[in-house]
Length: 321
Image (cartoon, rainbow, N blue to C red):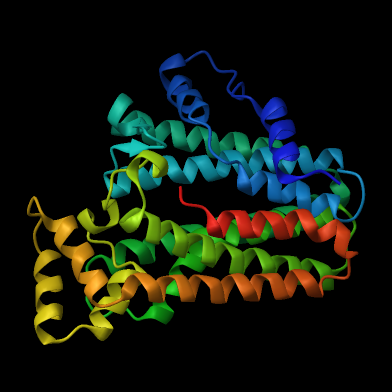
């Protein structure tokens, strides 16, 4: 069994950035630039880890891992455009550097190449892999649409928000594990537990991401501080603050989300602290982490083979960047 770090290195060595053979460099260079920004490669490595739970890593798992990473980066390029983000991993976003139209096309071609990798999977598994992948892809689009709609609403509930991040973020982690397990020959019961592990871990991961966007150190996090606040995103922090705030605090918070004054981020963060949203956020995150670990424990695989996934879960949720 390999650790997450060992599999990440193996994947990075195999993955590289040479996925685009076309001659129109103005289209492919932005995609290569974005892939070159790196990242933790969590999703493709989860596919490999899910596969390795049931034996040696199969060649098909590498093809799916490539597809997962390319698809994930495609969604990030488009998310940055919709969010009007200027930085990604501490570097200019693709649309900032190359223009919005080129960024859209570069993201599109990245998605197409992802499906080219999927097409290389053995016919024995291809139909089921495509079913899992396509369901995940549609759900991510649904989640992004809900995310944008929530920006225009002041009555978003916590349950609605959790549903949105499940679609937008969690299903990709869950599907990566499930596809890896499927390619490893696991039964439906184990696939279900691994999917549930990935889904709940993904929710905890997104909650931590939202928390760090507000309270993390910009030098470590690699993003503009308070980006979600500036973009008027109805994160779970905002939802909880609106729920527990007194009349004056609620009016103040809503007023901040109608404008973008220079001190908006600082003022909203202070209001979060006054409402004790920061400590509540950590409790909620840990609840989903515990649920994820329960499903991992329930998978019918020896404990020693599951240790790497357990270690990764704790690392992702305890991170400060």
